Image (cartoon, rainbow, N blue to C red; front, side, top):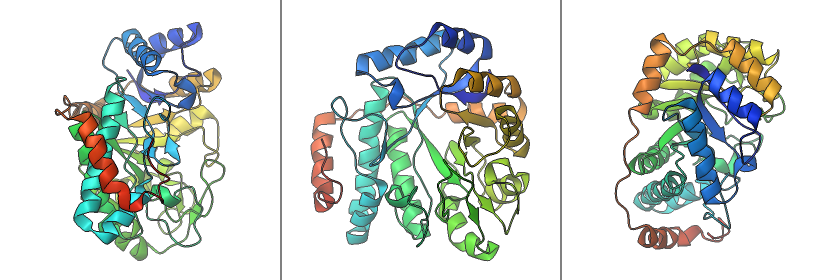
Length: 342
């Protein structure tokens, strides 16, 4: 088992991908819309990957709700963005927290039905005025305590449904003025400001099993390297100030924010302190480059991986139809803002 998570190209494995999975032995798989057909086909794909790997490898997806939802109509419900829970929280704190937890529990039920067991959610990013909209309504809000509370409720809902949450994007993506999918964001805020805002939102969530880095430069900490490849930020902020001790993965190595070859990016992220790296686009040449640079998962990284996966538990019983109706009722106050639920 090697220290990377891979994507694949389409809704069914190619012969080359079967060989790659068998030989490279990635830690896990991440699923995107290009991999999604009907539920039965998606479940068959997930099961085949695990059969080839010979273990219950984690299978990840970005199922946030709103703009970032890989599973959607007609086979799966449409969910609101995180901002909708934040708006409900502002009107009634208890209702907002209950809605976030229930929404996550319903997402977990959808994922568990197709054997996906990791959701790259919740975000604890704090968007600020003038920031790029790449985060925007994906955030629960702009105040640390509110964001932490809602993110914790969402994570609890996922865990109750047998799905592991991935906290993102450490140590914060909300101040980025460019989209890291395209370019490298540079944040010039002072460290003292970051400590009481961006970093503060993550501290109460430090016990979550998995987390993802941000491809963002924080000049007050490291003038050159983004968090993903900065040993200073991983050691002093993510593991230090924030106190996160779970499995730390990079954001997607194929994003435009990073420079160098895929092998160089892999080596840099792992050297900085990421436990595993994430590669998403399903391009075979890139997948091979990442696999060649990723070592066997061992030592402290292997311990963190095992501890994270040990937190997968069978889903608690739920009246799915009844809870979907309850969720719609809870969200009725922000129905127009979320454009309704399918």
